[in-house]
Length: 363
Image (tube, rainbow, N blue to C red; front, side):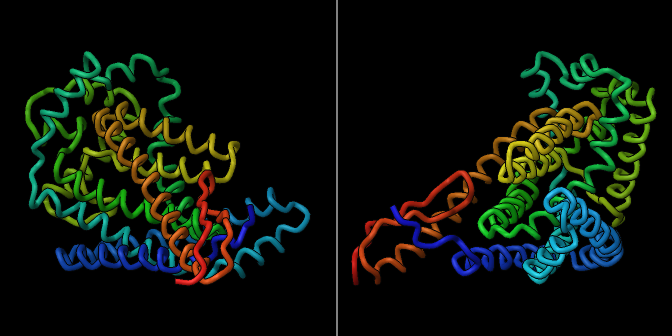
């Protein structure tokens, strides 16, 4: 079999442009629904926070990769990477900033239209599936001396890895892998972050008493109140609840439990890192496991929030790969229809292949 052509920007141009257009539609919807909130988040929080973080992350991240990838000439590596991808990466990052503000806007305004109705049902489902509240199990099996580490992974590291993965994807030379990641990230934000969130509108165990009433998770709050990490999580929940109750736009604004976007994005990043080899993928899978465990341990989510996020994200990742490969196949079939009949194997998303042919000569 003969390799006719590799996937390049031309083959994936429509797909990449399509993802960009969908992102801008998502932004337009958020801006139209709540223009004041959207532009406040965009200017006061998203641009200020990310505009400081992104250049620093890009600089140190690229320097670190250069040292390991090309220790003999790291500066040459950086120059080549910037020459190859800086224009495309700037566009990607710009669209990401617009979408980040849109996501926060929709997360903030959703409770204004749909109340938190699902917490009692999700709490019951969690306890039924696990023969008791799963947060109790996590505290029983996890050594408390390790709690500060879990806190750092769930809190400060979250922002670093989120921005870091976007930058890694933006500078990834493989067009198929890059487009697949951002298509998946968009679908996670829209399908899970908007549609499923409305269908299962809930706040989570840490907010249960203030949202649903009763002392269903009073023991959880009491346990969290005994450690520095737990107190920090409670303080964060107070900050978010105040934003919700007073309808104030603040950084990180919005309350939502079902489904867990923390778990969804952590899984997506693990799947993305798996495209670059087994060694680096271990870090992605470790972080995903820590986020899934920590989301229940600290009371931000019911375990079922994570389970649904895992299943849906896996399907989205699979769909995005097939969608990109199908477009590649269509383009190759169209091209080969006017050439000599032959069988072709086309490079596609790593781990999959698209076999095209034999093709018919002429039409």
